[in-house]
Amino acid sequence: MTTILKRTEGAIKAEARQRAFSVLRKAWKRRSAEGFTANELAARLGRDKAQVSRVLNGHSPTMTLETLALFLDGMGYQLRIDCDADEDVVVPNRGAVGALGREKVS
Amino acid sequence: MVLFEPVLVRGEAYRRRLWLHPVLADWVNTRGVGKEVRFFDDVRAFLKSFVTGDDFDDDVKLKELKTQSGGWYEFRITFNPQMRIFGGFLRYGEFVAVLQDDRRSLDRNSFAPSIQRTAQIWKGLFPNHPPLKDSRDLLLGEFFDDNHS
Image 1 (cartoon, rainbow over the protein chains, first blue to last red):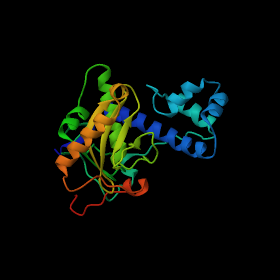
Image 2: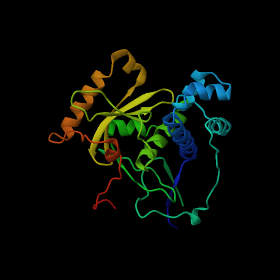
Image 3: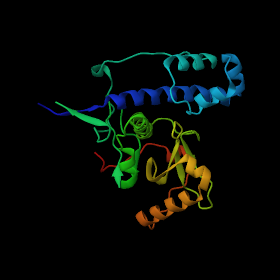
Image 4: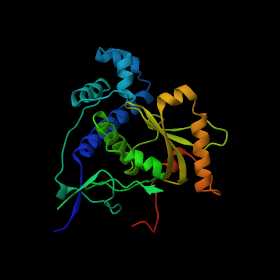
């Protein structure tokens, strides 16, 4: 049987957290470039500015899906959640299976 | 040096290349106990987002250090405990990370010793190759190497 490499449970969760933060940063970069401030976002969300800044700068230990949705809404964005079956994903021409964060399954 | 090659899922590809100093690679690959497990999973996910081509074009995740010579960067691990990973670009889309330090100790001691140590390690590795200096867009572009399978 072919041995393949599978991400660990911890890696799957950590990569999801990383993606959530990247989505938040993407929205924030655009809005802040347009002049929208953390103060304004805090006021819109009814939150403390320091707390909002912590989340925007990745200092918050956990960002839940609810927090992400709330912050995006405050920035005039909508969170879109979707999924793809592995077999439907277009495989890029480049890249290979690597060595870290893996466990062997057969 | 150790090439950082995280497991990819369908649809992902290696867009950039990241080399880790062996001591740093050991640290990055720490499994950890208790809260450390999640921390090191997050560190690896953060670095994976770099090699798979995520947006690193502002100072929140990657920042150029203010030095006379230029070309030194820090990856900014902003979740706790905050860490910094130092290094520079060897080629476009190819980063060599040589050292990590705790943000709290950098607060106490300033960045200067870590930057100096980074430069020393780099010089030992690449005596005739100072870190690449160019615009962020170009440095963070895709890495192309015909020999890389």
